Length: 349
Image 1: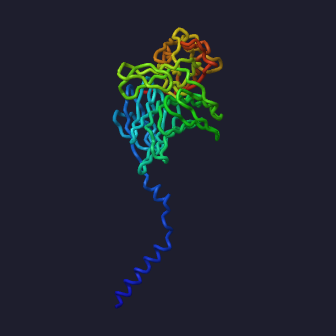
Image 2: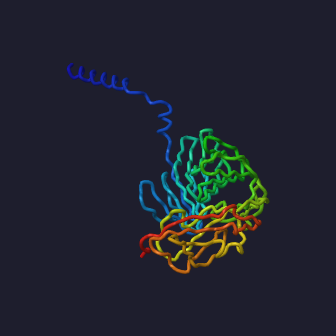
Image 3: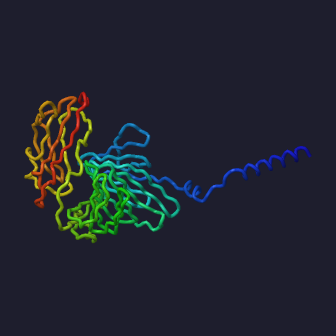
């Protein structure tokens, strides 16, 4: 009898405890059921650096590598890579592009992918998101792009300005509390700290690879070319002024004091004859700026300044590309483009 009484008391205490604890709301259950999904890295050419969440050191990435949420990817100069997500969406990273995976999660039929693009260019192919709770978003220092299934590119330059070009469907671009809808065949450039302006027609050449294999064809905005004919190039017939979209070294970066190239990548093809030792210069800062002797070359949208000798230790340098640099369409840079970087105390052994 005493044991039975103890059992009844214990059951009663459990019931009281369950009644006193707060019940789980539908939103709490829904949130906890979201599954973090990994993505796969494909190195198209060159190499990439990976910064794993919680780590302080970059490590080389490998082809086929599985990446988790919180991982940061940086493509090296003259390199390209692609991330493939759980729902089939892909993002192709051009050279010298810095991107972080902030969310990649699924919940039933819905899912959410959020990327943070810090610098460089990406081409995004987003599968159609049927569930209204699904979203694909890219955040940059100056804007964000939100889609539900489309093909578009995002470029972030050294001044943190963001250009979004839409090839299929539409993209919502927002900044400073304002948004615009950018339809296929249009682009918008959001200046850092400013709201998005009205979209304008795309006026440049966009080249990309739908996968690690390149295809070719020509097109007008909003249509797809036939596949299987070489590099896929989308020719959009109006001209746009040239812009420096990324550099190596990056602005304010600290690098080893070695003989190494200094590069600047443009958004449109340039006239090689206008990129030379006069329009692209490097100087060492000091009491009087000292010009650095070197040669200038241009290839694949990228201008390269190669010093004749190793850079000095513990020194600051400024690279300048002047308005004498002109695109193949005959348009110059709007303003001189300048950025600075510094060398470390000793070369890498």
